[in-house]
Image (cartoon, rainbow, N blue to C red; front, side, top):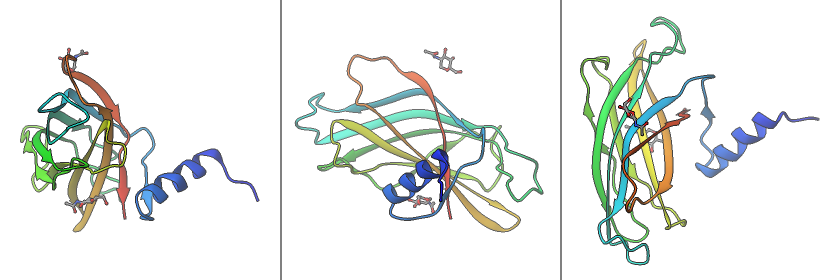
Length: 161
Ligand SMILES: *[C@@H]1O[C@H](CO)[C@@H](O)[C@H](O)[C@H]1NC(C)=O
Ligand SMILES: *[C@@H]1O[C@H](CO)[C@@H](O)[C@H](O)[C@H]1NC(C)=O
């Protein structure tokens, strides 16, 4: 029996997230802009508190009516975390109502991780499609900023089902 390489990647991702079945949509990405994630003391050995601030958006994926439909969204997320490893609960991001479908919500949290040298920040976009609640999530793993100015990157989100 042969596994394709992308199947193995999916298995690895599922295992890392506690066995949930995850599904990616091909060519579906999120844009993260003006990303900042920092330690309040700037000391990675004593990260008692941390903060993040960024903008995240996704274009619409397929057409409304399709089972794979994902509505366009945009939001500005800010928050802070504490503890060791650093963590926070999900907190709501400020929705950009001009590009976001009514009823969608976006939230973010600092995920506690054994890798304490980097920021692990989960972003979740929740909406409903044909009355069914859907939840797409991506986790950004970045350096805690020091002198670095805000920057941009893309994320490949997955659906937890
Ligand atoms: C990041 O994206 C924003 C919005 O698209 C853009 O204005 C800015 O120039 C970008 N910054 C960099 C460093 O590319
Ligand atoms: C969305 O899914 C993620 C990953 O499974 C989960 O941690 C999060 O709590 C969910 N968000 C909502 C609002 O249900």
